[in-house]
Image (cartoon, rainbow, N blue to C red):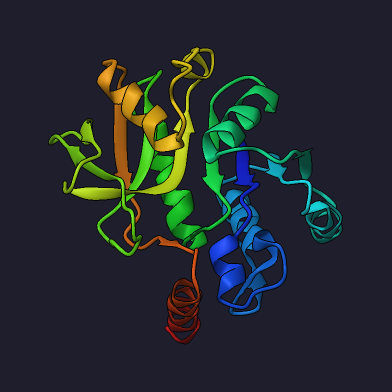
Length: 230
């Protein structure tokens, strides 16, 4: 199993809130978002990563190679039109096999991330697994309804049991699928998988913060400090 990181967004909302650096280098309690996500993968035993950044974020490549010299980091430098396009680029470029994908702004504790990867590994072969959380802080959450076994019954709408958390396990058969050309967003792709009858499961990470605004940075820093003092 290898990993992928989607880090090609512009971070426009954080820039409006006063951050000048590329979003992957925005710090939570002194640690850049990209470092946090890479550390999450390492905690899960995954050290081969395919990372996409946009063309204005080339500094992230140099920084990451210097920060993690022993890891197998493969970078794609491309400005994409959407998270779905970035996702597709990572799926196409990563080594064959199942792939764990995280957005760079899905902030959570390394132990929780590793626990999700372990839980996903126990799901049926060929299943797509979504990290989901009962902690709803995103201004546009993607709601999921699960059955008693954790299979996703519905994705989208105005409510549900949990919300998606920006971390996904994509099996090799699903990586080979050609989704409809009309899909424009990553959430539409995930909803298409569910609607098409493919096995899609949700495994819970209790607290994941989608870091898009100043308030999200503050919330994640509070959580990080609580961890340090526990």
